[in-house]
Length: 72
Image 1 (tube, rainbow, N blue to C red):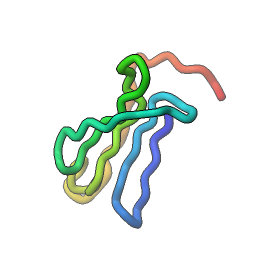
Image 2: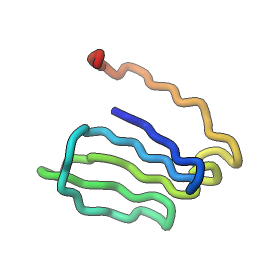
Image 3: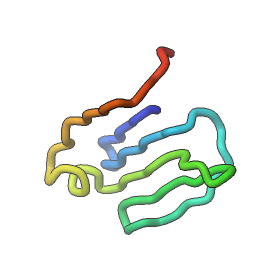
Image 4: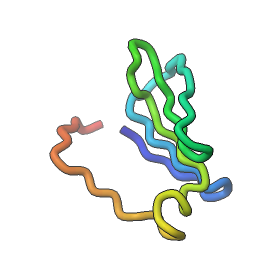
């Protein structure tokens, strides 16, 4: 998983599956969209106007619990 933030456009992208993927976009709100890949897998989440959507001006601390991972 990779999380990237672009402060110039205030957009946050959470990539759950690495690599090039052919995706369709499911727009949840004006600010939040899901990228759905092959076999209906969730590839990524895009959040526009991220500071407002996620934290009333400040991006919140991110905590990940019980998620197994492998070192890159």
